[in-house]
Image 1 (cartoon, each protein chain N blue to C red):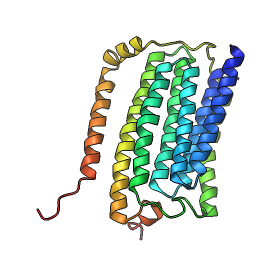
Image 2: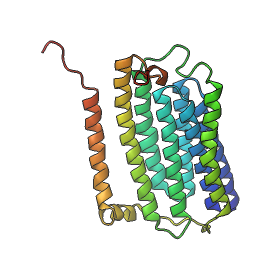
Image 3: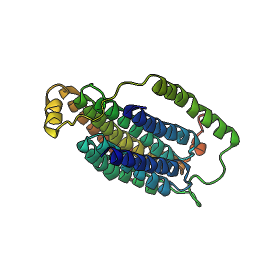
Image 4: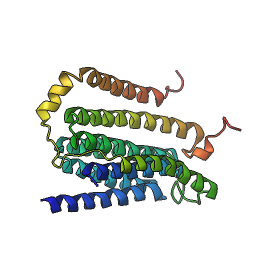
Length: 169
Length: 102
């Protein structure tokens, strides 16, 4: 079982790596979106490995099901450039500065993670859906209500932003 | 190397991919895709830290659920903003919407 977990971890890491490289480097936005979906599925596998199947299910439902479709609508509703939205060379200066902006926080965080390891337990604790529901309705009731208000406001705001008045009235 | 460190490194890879993409992309929708990558790295890091230590696992999973809800709300609003910008400027490229600067 130990070996199986390690193999699964390596497979999911490879899926995440490949997907994120596709998402970042592809010149066509639809292909970048496919890369994002591959990455999201890899992260869902990681949640399964961490003994939280409910989180994996929610990841597939919310991200792969809803957010990806939203982004696909955004791709379709904007006028696409011929030959891909991201075609053409990125200026050298932008690449170098972007790489520096990536490496700076990554080096700090990586150094912290590597030099100050936290003792981890071998077998992850499993949380039942019942416990999660009880948590939502007792200790974390306020954030639970706030997130519904935020979703409502975001939805109403999106409708308001894209509202078009009828001509001639 | 402990299991938690491995998961944190994967989350760090997701953060780096998102950050690098955010600086390279020239369209608003591409930038949105990179932001989603970074948010996923944050969620993975939170769940790994909660599941693999003595910390309350319920709080970790609920926190990641809230991150997912916020990501959905953010994607909705960004979609609306991108549609408004595309209608107003005729394109969703970042180089075309710099009129404030000139």
